[in-house]
Every structure is written in C-alpha cells, then in structure tokens.
Image 1 (spheres, rainbow, N blue to C red):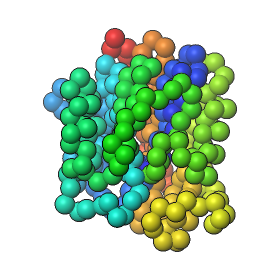
Image 2: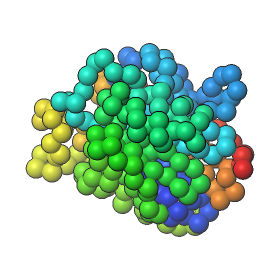
Image 3: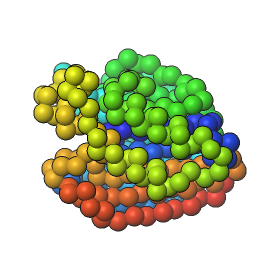
Image 4: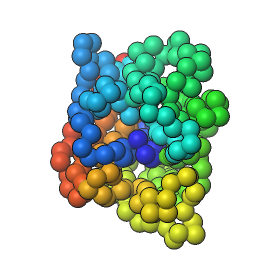
Length: 253
C-alpha cells in the first residue's frame, strides 16, 4: 500500500471514508478482494506470494490497512511479511496491540492503521509509537502519519471537500482523486533514500508504470448504522481498468 486517505468523523452520515491505492510490481500474483475462507468474515484482496493483504475489513466493522515506510537502510530481505499483520488484527483485536509492540521489529518498516467505529490508531514501527487518530481528514503514505508530502496534501484537501457535505460521497469523484497523476516540482519532492528518478516516479497519488505502479484503488465507506460499502478497482501497467468489484456488508454490531 502506497497511500491512504481517511475522513474520520467528518461526514455525519458516513463517519468513516477511506480511500487507498496499492502500489506494487505488476507481476506479483494477487487475488482480487474476496471473503476469506473458511469463515468468510474478512474481506480483502490477497497477496498470493506471501499470503497476506494490504487492506482488509471484518464483518463486525474492524478495519486495518498497511503502508510501507520508505527507509532503505532499515530494510532486510529476511523478515516476515507485513501483510500478515492485517488478518492477525482483524481476527484477534483484543490481544493485538501488545503483540504488535513486541513483534514489530520482525518486519520491515511500516505504518499500520487499525480500529473500528470512531477509534482508529496508527502504529509507526520505526518510532515504535501508536497514535490515536483525531477526528478529521488524514493522509498516510510512506513516511510518518500526516507528513506534508505534496501528493498527501493534495489528496487530503480533495477528501476534505468531498466528505464535508452530508450524504454519501460521490464514488466517481473519490476514484478520480485516487487517479491523480500530477507530480510536484523536484524542489518539493521528499528525500526518502531512493534516487531522484524514483522520487519523481513515486510522487503522484496514482503511479502509472508498466513494471511498478498502482495496482488497485480501494474505497471503504461505513455509514452511521455500521453498514460497509467496499469497492475495489484494479489496473494494469498502462493504467487500464482490469476489473471492479463492489461489496456491501450489513451492520455487525
């Protein structure tokens, strides 16, 4: 997962509005969003190489999403897959926070956003810090939560405008926001330890590249009754839509 925006307690009718792009190598095998066997309680896409996921929701209203922290000096090829963190939380939320604090160093650097209802948290594994998200619009990408990278700032402003009006936000406009390919000037690029060419390539909300880029957009809207509406749109390396799936989960509370 490369970038995630969420409006928490902003829209009176939809207290959670979450929009996320997964950026990954296009050749990495992936299953579209589906209910996971055997109990069909978790809805998520699935990385078929390591078995985990980048974003998932539970029928009872729990939600978790993951972003990589771009810090090459802290990366190792011998660590466990971060994608396993999301199903672990969704299946066992009560024991998860202390477990996460103890085991976070077993994974490459990550931000993990998790919670339910109006209580969500962001855990930064490099800082070993868990922060509760205040009501409002948030942007989480490959640095610390709410870093002011250009693409994060522009997406956050767009979500603020789209979520402020009561009623269901326009899905078409949310998807349009997540397909923004605009890039900032080099002087405004963050410095995250990769080459200038890669900083440029990764600087837009939507990354169009035949080898590595945006694989999917996920929208999750949860209304005040707890009903979840989940949309996943998948893309190829040329930015063409490969498929769209929509799911509705009734309130589990």
